[in-house]
Length: 159
Image (cartoon, rainbow, N blue to C red; front, side, top):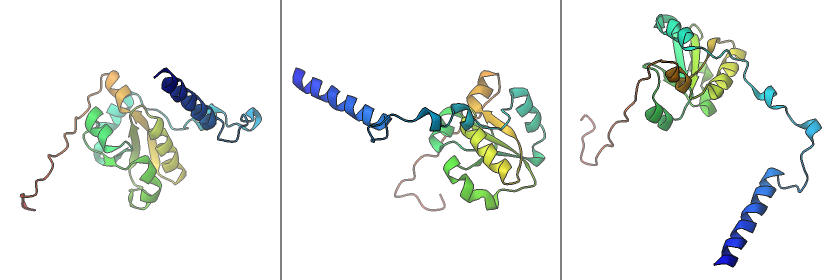
């Protein structure tokens, strides 16, 4: 048992080291590394009061939530939104209305910031990005989304 445990730890250590250096056996060159701050979004992260002000005039506002459906149902979100996962956003640009002010949403505004940057670069009017968990911590109210019950085989299509 002890030999099996040791062998397992050795395999995990080797796999970890291999994945960290990209499998080349060489350490990354810091001179060619992308600085972490260069990956940060340029989008403005909206405060609770800024978002509440935008939500009070919904007629020209479009909320795009870039989270997965399980995150929406587990954490909650805003009452009305367009759900487009970040990985699908680029191919969905053609049907997003350009005449509205857009707020992008994720859990902590990181993915929302990335989405906001993409939309702004394509000519959309973007007010900023919001993290719903941060919004809720600041006193904002989230809507809990309850997924529908699974359909049974005997259920009619109309029912």
